[in-house]
View (tube, rainbow, N blue to C red):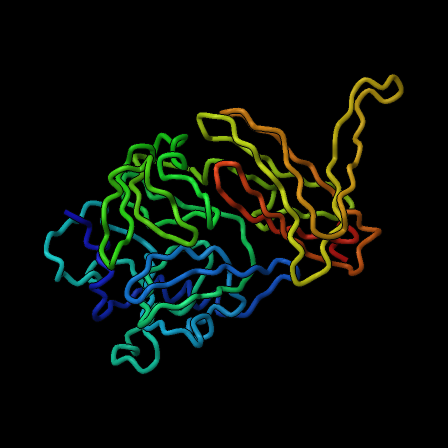
Length: 349
C-alpha cells in the first residue's frame, strides 16, 4: 500500500493550490548573485522522473527554466496535510490530495489549470519528459535546508557525488529520525520500496520519499552551519563555517574554491596559535590562491564539530563586491555548496 501522493503517473487534472501560486509568484523576479552560479546537470528519462533541484534559477518561471526541453508536466509538494493516506488503486487521481502545485507546458489542454508559477531551488519535483534529455539547470548555489515534517513521508533530495555516492544506509546512519525508516525511490515510473538501504546507492539529482519518525533537523552526514543562510559574509571581519559530523564514524571533509563566472575571492584560513609569551593566543592567516584551490581538512570524529574561520583579503579584491563558491565534499561521497560574499568593507561597498 502506498500514499496517494506517491503516484507520479496519475497527474491528470489539477487542483488550485493557493500557497503554491503565491510562493511561485514571489520568486519570479530574476535574480543572480555574481560568482554564485553553478550548473547542475540532471539526466531525465522518458516518462516520470523524481528530481532534486539544488540551484536557484535566475528566472524561476517554468517556461524559462524548461525552455527547449521535452518536458510537459512538473509538480512539487508544498504541503502534505495528510500523512497516512494510503490507496491500492493506481487509478486514483494524485491531485485529489491537497498541497501540490503543478505546471503544464503551453499547448497541453490542461495548461490553463496550472498552479505552479515558480521553480525554486532546494526542492524535490516530479518531472514528466516526453523523451530522454539532459537538463542543465543553471542558477545560484544555495545553502542546503530541508524542512522535515514529523511522523510523515517527506519528498526530499540531497547532493551527492555523481560517481561514488553513499548508500541510503550510510547517509542516514546518524539520524535517529530516519535510520531504518521506509524509503521509496522512482523506478520505471513507479515508486518502489528500497529493500536494502545498505546496498542501494543514492544518485545525484534524485528525489525520494523517506519517513521521518518524529521531528528532525537532519541536513546530511556533514552538517554545515554559517551565521547567515546566504553563506559566508566577509568584509573587514571574519566569518566561519561550523562542520558537524552526524555519522557514527569519522568523516573527512575537503573544501574546494570553484572559479565561477567572476574573479574568485582571495581567501585565507584563520589558524589560532598558542604559547607565544608576548601574545598567548594569536590568529595566523593561511593565504589561499586568488583562484581555484582545494584543501583537505583533518578527519572529524563521530559526533564532533569544528569551526573553519575564514577572511577575505579585501585589499586584493578587484571589485567592491565579489562572490565565490566553496564546494565541500566528504570521503563518504556527499557534497554541499557554500556561497561566499566578499566586501571591501562591512557596509558592502
